[in-house]
Image 1 (cartoon, rainbow, N blue to C red):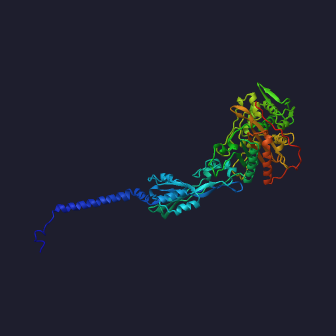
Image 2: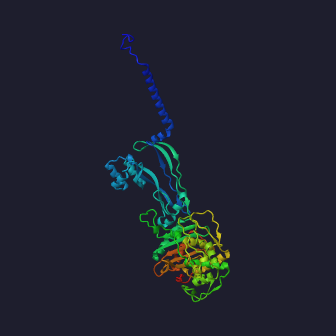
Length: 576
């Protein structure tokens, strides 16, 4: 059969239909090409990101904080590796038995676990933070889809409560919250890294694609603290607080040459490794942030100002007979009245009347200038968070009675660290040495306050305090000449001096012939019959100073002599 001659086989389509089909096909290919160009050319990055989001992940590589050490390299704060369990709720598909096993390992109630996994729109939720590696391994053995481990670090403090107030602590995310951990956060903190990986449908890593950022570990920080001296200071302070049933206590040990803090302790304290029962009162670094009226420990600065002014000499006679001095409607009294005293004896016997008379014999600006130059009223600048600067009023506002009481440590507030730093003026050539909690390779230059002659003169007077007839014979250290000063100040309660609450202190240095160490001790509100600084604080000084001098192999500067019975008398600043 010939198709050309058969009528049914010789059917021909109209020309316009052929052209229409061609146009439609061409338009379809054009649209597909345009769409492909739009997707692969103009919108490529967006689509790639959407695609990678389904299988590619950025995994953070943890970096630990830098270690904190004492001046000899002994570890004080260490970051230990821990594992945190997290989940992607949308990928979690667990049986009831698996949920029960997981909850038991994480020490969670099943209901709490269900609540954390309830929101399936979330990509990340912590189930348990900081698990020990051994416990985390048990979670891995369950092989649960959507449940993963993340390496983190937890801070450990080997010294425990002994050094808690200096070091402070970090939070759950390993960020500094208190103390050195907070003050040097930028130095200690590590910078985490990251890497890109490919995961399968249930979240398992199947390929490590590339490293994005290399982790930077935190830098090590060497403190000025000597851990052995710290343990010694802590032990003696704890024994004294317990013996005298005191409210609190603080101690500071300084190297007077470099200004480095070799030991600093407070009670009550806390264990930074277990803060379950932590209270704000235990957290305070009292030696740095708490203020108190220094009482008679301020008298050497008044004497130094008078010597610099030229109004007195060490052997000048000060009228103190009767042990009282009336100024307006107020009367200043000595705790233990004596006859007229020399300037040296005013310090040795701790006469309030004698000190007040010297202060009133010079312009108030002279006394203020010496106190201000000694660092009172200004923060010590150790970098410790919240360090207090104390209170030193402008001299133009002093009334005569205020000038008198200021001379023996009432009407002025200081921190123990601030007072310890101020006493470095008497340990050398009259220069105020800046203090530091970080180890120094070279001593920092001091700031001149008084002349070397005046510094040596006051140093000799302070040495009389620890000898028989002084207020602190219990501060003696066999084989060493010791200089220092007691302080027993009534505490302010509701704007008035409480008759039975005291801040009892002693601050001194040794060897007096060439000072090397300075120890400041404060016992807050001792109970019982003994509350004078010479009774409760001076023995702590003697025990710590004796041990510290031996540890540092400081040569004795006098033969070991037998002394007479210890005089229990000590100074007290009476309410005015």
